[in-house]
Length: 468
Image (cartoon, rainbow, N blue to C red; front, side):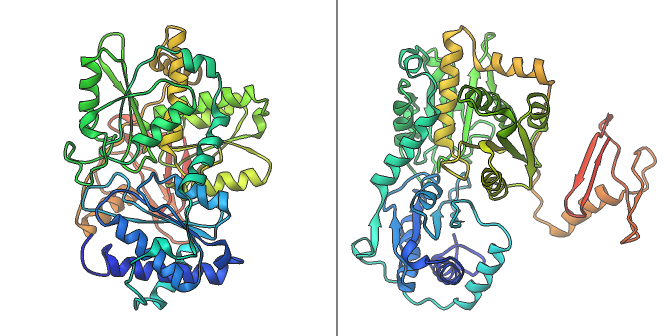
């Protein structure tokens, strides 16, 4: 959040909202009457940005379905779908550092926008750069603004009840677990979701339970980051509790760690949780008599291929998509329109979409489903790590070693990828030789990395894919 057209600030929020509202009015039938859904998290300026967004849509003639208080990201895509709104906006920067904020757009189907919508919206923003109004005084009292918090959240929790498997087991479980919302908005929503499943309440990390936009106890408010769950694990150790669960600050992601029998902590990766959810969703679908061939699950191209193997063995439909839930959610919705049952969409960055009531990642629902599974396993004297090992035994062992490098130099970054793609003269690196007839260049990907053979290459930039 800084001054300038390349940063998020009051001016760019107004411009974005003016352009988005103009494009929605132009392209969505009955957009003004259907209205826009607007929500926001607890970050610095989110409150103001949400109201500036509402002001721009009101000036355009829209109805505004408003969440005036802080809330989780999944409430907006849920409400867009439930209310059949024209579009939705969530002001959030998810798990980004404290100085960031963001503007997340959903279309009329409740999924994030994808091309060519983004291009059309961007063009409309350019046409509406000059702000019409900065006045947000009394926004909530405008007759066209409706506070939808109570009816929408009631409906959200009611829809999630479809995922409850054994309420008596849930109510009787002796499972204990520590929870942290990472200084975010998740605690009251996670508590209500767990209660609606009949599950016992969590033990909260007190220093991280309340929303705080400065995230004072973590350097980076992302449950995936090394050390992010240290306070939760320390509390669990002190109280002899063997399970830690977490949401990121806007509660659209979910993470978990479990103490193993040797006393060590297993921090589940995003892909491991994806496999666990996939197997459990398959169990739930079968108990609901959903035919395997009509069950659909997807993940993104940066996620594990274990889900693909599970689909091949079990017979459910599988697809992978480009990175991001805008692709996965729209793919799952298209499959649902073809008669498939939406089972799971996931990405290795701890994002999980379970069921179809939210066409985006939903950490609150994922949390309750995970604890429900853990409670069932606990009743059998097992833990989630055991469950994961049983999946490896059945489908094969898959591992991921994801990390990242920060490179502020775009030229150097281009050189790195050109070297991977087209190779160099190093004699000790065996490389492919694929000549592209339409361009005349030769792709020379490494065929081994660290001594291990490369079995799969997919380069979306040039449109190349190779297996074995």
